[in-house]
Length: 130
Length: 409
Ligand SMILES: Cc1ncc(COP(=O)(O)O)c(C=O)c1O
Image: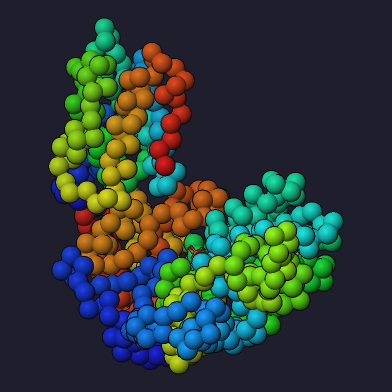
């Protein structure tokens, strides 16, 4: 699981930090392992211009978030909504043990929350994945 | 240094250690979660199903009488092991069920007392049942504070145990930090104020001598699977005089003496609290596990695990780790730690690559982790078959994790 590309994303995450003028943002927390993730998007004309993430967690969850941010710029909100678990698994390109799948998918859950956030406030709101 | 027992020889009595994990020999250091099973226990359970299987208390035929005899003898064996009589031993599924039984059946004995006193160190199993009882019955829930050295604050206990205290429930050994609580002192304080006492002994009975009379507790709960027996079998010890005054937990077959369409009369102890067909093979297997432990000697096991704990604490200090353990004088063979810059789950996952089983997470003690300000820890917990080589294997694995993650030492 801990291939070189995972560790390098963990040690030097891409798009780590926050955005001054984010239009979309969401936060997720996994109480089971304490992983904590915030995603911020700057969207103009339905298209992602910039992205940042912040938080803390294991190498798998942080590396997955970092890799995900690398592919979201330029995508439309609708394209973000269509991203699936398999897209994340392909990005990671490692054999994940069953106990670690939740860690890998926390970033997708957060991104989806951010993408849905604006139009449907509330109903996708504080979904905590346990 | 010479150990009190020969763990390498003992390891050979546990067939699971023959197998390989990721091509490496198995180093099992998650004994606080559950222990491996010796051949003696496996053989006893196999023999029961091969030669003696029948329902108990029901048949007049030979086979049923054999099964009944073995099941009743299990009560006596486990009773002797902790200084209790056979009718004070109730078989449950596990520690959790034992405590739920109490949370259900004990309140009628509380009288006007309205406070439940726990400690900040409890496993969810000794917290949630009482918390829910407090909500249901409108009782007050209080907690004895933990000191910064991970020991229990006795002065705080003294302050909080009052004539309003219905019950003090505490763990003997904390599964998250290894802290050995001064149970004897707490039960004395409780007794002086007329409060009942419940001891969660899930992490002490498998690792040190435990005697309910010496501890002075009213109730004691533990799990078979953490003491080299099978899963699905647990124990609740209760003082006979109290058990007799308590209403049953579950009702139905076996726990009754006489039943009419509109009424029922409860059976004698311990059957009154053992409704339905019990886990017969589990109970007999647990008795075999107890005999196995007695042959080795609980004092010897404690000494051996103490030695390994001291060794591991010493060696861990060489790394850039935070250790959450009260020290060898106040702690058992459970060591929680965090490696700087590496999440506990990553530590546990990477240990697995070396064939080492350790736990990473909150250890069913979320409020305690929150108090410590951490999401969780990596945890090593020893059993009687662990060796100095096992400790060395952990240190080698830590070395390689540090190299991988580039942590500065
Ligand atoms: C201190 C303590 N109490 C209670 C339990 C619960 O045991 P079980 O899951 O067997 O009911 C455990 C085990 O995880 C424990 O370590």
